[in-house]
Image (cartoon, rainbow, N blue to C red):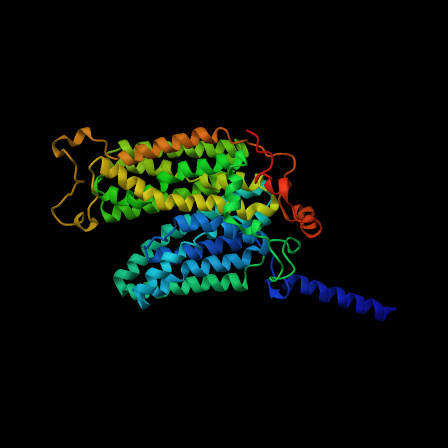
Length: 471
């Protein structure tokens, strides 16, 4: 009898070890549970490696189409594999900068398809956090992204001047490889095993993975439609601002390059504080929807100040307001995640990321067109630091410069965000009663329906993307 107990105890220990160490058909998952820390490290390393190069990642129409597809596939196959896929292909062009310019151009042209790590990361966070913790977790991830972009360009510029560009590319490649190895070795799968197929050979319907199917659902669900319009109208001027604002500071406001670097650092640090400390306080005190509205209000004020401001102190004050407006995106991601069903987190986050990718392609063209309409041309930045010169933007009537608004694109952007604010007013604050609370327990019923229910068809295939979306 004692021997049987020992055997049973040994079997239980073996099963427990298998459960902890080996999941999903034998793939190593690490010795720890998935946490927000894993998501933070992945995001930081990926964008830090690109920030060292002071080269922007290319996103646009390709990520607009691919983000819902990758998000939908991660809802079926799990997050870890698609984290590895997106990080690998996003960072693949880095070493090619010194190997072959042609290969670099080809790789970076296609890397936009996989530049959607945020959608998988936010779905990863949604898998492992409760609803009341999710906005804080999203704010932490967004703040980590800001921290990587605050620190890495200055480090990359210093190393480039001191040791040359080759060292910077090697260091960026090493950090990207570290990120990939971290995902392979240390990042556990967040999607519960019952929600995933038994193996990679299990069938998957095209309806589950079709990006256009998820986009068609936008027209069938008023809540997600309102959220997507809000994201598009608010992020379009923000994407355009990133493409021209620092050049605008140097040529119109006459900031020196050192002042611009200090401006980026200060605004970045304030954004980190806003997305970690302030966001959590606002979410608890005024709610998710009102936090979004407040963030959009800060963005309107920021853009209007950029547009009318003509003195350096005005830019610094507007930069502080811009840091407060950074709470909008994590708050929007939180309300989307809270309203979406547990097996659609990747799809909805992919749609938001796709809309932002589309804005990254259209925003710079939008700002450039507005500058062109007002006969303002931002010339080469090298002329700004030339001794004895204070270049100004070329205008149609230089004798009447005081009558021209310093930054017309920013005012048009403020109008776009105002429209976004009006649309956001109609987003419902609370989801329907069918939405389950966060955490692992919420997957039990979903997993059972995946494994026992027959494939839906007809009217069932046209369910709205979010629960209870009546406005």
